[in-house]
Image (cartoon, rainbow, N blue to C red; front, side):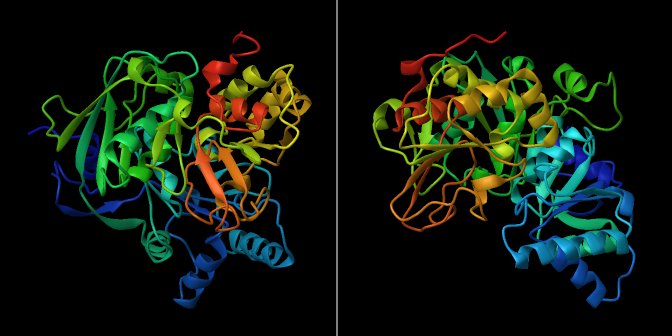
Length: 423
């Protein structure tokens, strides 16, 4: 019997010829990442157990992105402790305040490559599956074990095959694709399963779109999410070949097959307080919003900012709506400056934030007050996530968020239209 991508990668990492769904394996991790919420605690945990050196400091990245820059003296002290830990444990890859969001930096800086097994202290580590990487989030005790030994146990997951065909219509983005799956299948559909995306539409799906979908796979409960390593991957990595497993076997066994026809999709929005509470934008148009947010590890890339700029160019955000924009990395920030994208957004009334997580997780920057509503491109709309538990969060694509910012209420981007065409 052939193997899925999850099975092939875990078999390689466990030094086994083959594995199958349901088995437990001890696997060697290729790379790990820790962000600022957990880094200082992890360093203290290692020291308290007598561990003074890591299994491989060259295979570890630490990122300050959630509280970036520090919003309080207490957080600034945590950052200080993190920097001390970086020196103490000789960690090779450290990204300080303003560098960007951990998941964007991991792919941007080349830390993840097709066929790798990667773990991180963040649930959205499934993002790396856009490059055919087995990426998953783990807890602090598990990460301490990885840092000390370089290994971790896994149960080999079943895999769901997602066959995608057709092309997107005007006003529809790849964020709408994953919202469609959530609304149709639910937030626990892929619980401890892997998702594999395939089909005739995949070769035309750029890396930005793949990263968006893989990022939100965890919102369906997925352990891993995979796209094939193909020509799109090679162009993104500026490589012609790589080592390791990059595609499933043709006779691999799947727990389920899901078919998605892109032509049937329209702009969608996830309503409070669940990611799978999804409705067509046209059905909820007119709901007033106080804040719009474009950014996060889901949709803070150059392509996302450009989509927003196409709708906002020469126009002004509604006077009673705040528009916040947080590029996912410094490189994206600088390239957006060079191309004039940030100028368009700023002239439309947007507030440009430091590269990082920004308002997404409710740590600081753009918190919501009682009764306020925010529509954003981020990945979660749980009650109280962005401030007041009496606030409401709506999730949508960059096109829908930009259009809604213009009118101060949820608006279908097809009604607005773009101000300029993609060059």
